[in-house]
Length: 161
Image (cartoon, rainbow, N blue to C red; front, side, top):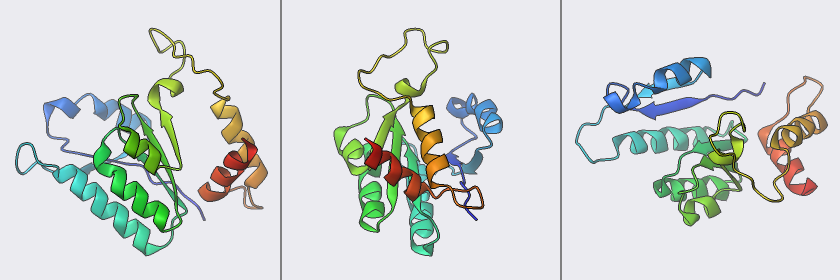
């Protein structure tokens, strides 16, 4: 059985994350509480990296999707790829090049926004219809159970381009 677990890490007691509550519920994202013990330190990043490495060493995942624009996760993405895992990154256009390069595929949030949601739609020349591409890849790689592994879908997409 294949499943995707979506977890959002942060100090959910702070005011700057209050607006995320609605999004967490709407998208079934599990909030992972990590208190900021000291201001300016990356306790949330550290907790995320520890949990990701636990998943990596458990050996029962096909790939990872890291949603961040933080270059601190560059080594994590590189290590996951060294272990043979597919790593997708999602982040803002401000994401540093090293993190983008450390992922097998990196998608900018701006590309995923619906034109009606964006004040000024981002036009990217040569960008395929992502929803259609992923849907086709899932259909082509799904097993009798109806499920497709993330690595198979990713490989199919890469080979199709």
